[in-house]
Amino acid sequence: MAPSHATRVFLFLQGPHGPFFAQLARMLRAAGATTWRVGFNKGDEAFWPDPASYLPFTADARLWPARAAALMDEKGVTDLVLYGDTRPIHADAIAAARARGITVHVFEEGYLRPYWVTYERGGANGHSRIMDLTVDQMRRALDGLDLDLPDAPARWGDMRQHVFYGALYHYFVFLRNRAYAGFRPHRALSVGQEFRLYLRRLALMPVLWADRVQATWRIKTGGFPYHLALLQLEHDASFRDHSPFATMEDFLRVLIAGFADGAPSHHHLVFKAHPLEDGRTPLRQNIRRIAAEHGVASRVHYVRGGKLARLLNDARSAVTVNSTAAQQALWRGLPLKAFGQAVYLKPEFVSDQPMDAFFQNPSRPDSRAYRDYRHFLLETSQITGSFYSARGRRQLLRQVVDMMLSPEDPYEALQAGRPAPRQHLRLVK
Image (tube, rainbow, N blue to C red):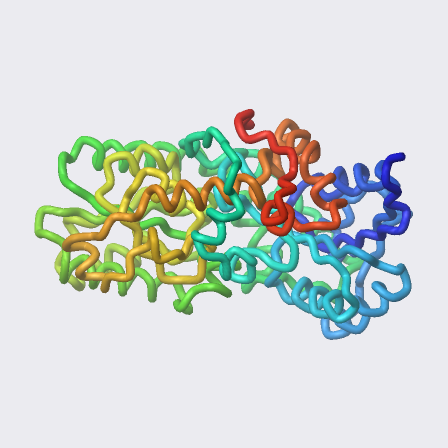
């Protein structure tokens, strides 16, 4: 007889922009579980089509911790589901859930993006269980398993869908949010500013594309050795909560100073912006100004997003705070320097050299250790699919629902010799 999940009660908080959480809840209900969704604004409500299970929170945010605890008790919640674990409303709910022994399911963008997403229990990124696992422990868990590892794809997936759903979400919050007077965004910008930035990015996509192509062409045809800096969104949780820098400009200063002091005079430094960079931080202007201060302006370049592989394939090394894009550099065997907390921050493949010494003669990673680490991720927390495209969501739901209903988290299952069935090689395009 199939196991019953009638006693499982899933409480959803904020998810990725778009319909993924609603579709996930429908699958969980089909398995026999009960689902509820707390919405904090009109955008949350718009992407949850079942009003009977929707619970609007319209009060002042200071009342949320008590309300979260009360909801968990009233509904008999057994599982908490959320996207990212650091925004204040999620951190408060996680604290209440842990006090009650409730399982916390955390979704995030893939550590091995673009064609995987991350599913973990308890926490993600700097709060992930991977932070405390050594490569040797991973190797022991993999003993006896054989997997033909797929190559790292060349581009970040579902860009247009991601931007579209982001713009639609902020439209609802900006123009139709009257019932949620107590809502405050978890980022520094107002909802209106966020909405205008999304619209601006959509409108400027052709211009940004032309600028990116021109900058990439100059670098590819320049014939000079170069080091690649992988930039992140200054407002993203990984940078905001798991890095030693208060602003992206602080990181730029450390990086350019190290390059000026240590890199051979014929080497160049290329900054690649995050694919979703929207101009709220004046990156190009800051890079030009700091490079000029150090006398290296002619050897420093800036590229607006685009395909990472085109630049990584010819790079000498890569530097980042804690971007997941660094995994593509490690896959290629490139030396890597990272500053923040990251799941790949293992001594076997991340350099501990000072910045100037790294640019002068970067130490290479242990590629065999990285392959074992990557194998471990693909057997545990990295799920084939995506949040934003219809095809990607279908592929993701085929796997992740059973993983959520399992009594073991993905890491425990593998270490116990019971890895979940996976679809590694059918990549979403």
